[in-house]
Length: 151
Image (cartoon, rainbow, N blue to C red; front, top):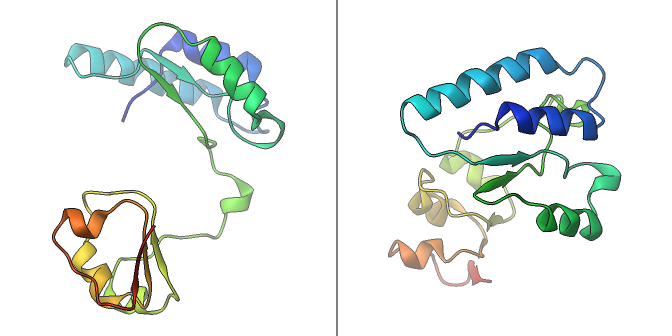
């Protein structure tokens, strides 16, 4: 997982309205430590980290275009979600990917091609499959006719 540089955190810290109790010092320490570890091991990571594009008024095309126009040379990571516990997410949980779980949903929408998903299981169990990434054909999986839509 990539980590931003210390300078990027300082820039974001001044521009972003972090919520009350956000652990700035702890996050800054993780950034410095992890960036140093990545560099020492010669692992690739973004040159810049942009953390001002999420939530409320910041989610505008104008803001996005301003960010893109101001990107430094190199590879940048654009954070589009908060990196902290959000009260709106409290109480939500992940569920295991099992046939019993998949059968319980009216439809399964594949929006991202993840290498660790058992797409054969999904094809067997889903009542309706909506595939936006061509994951089934790419893996040679033929979902049952009448329950599959390639979008």
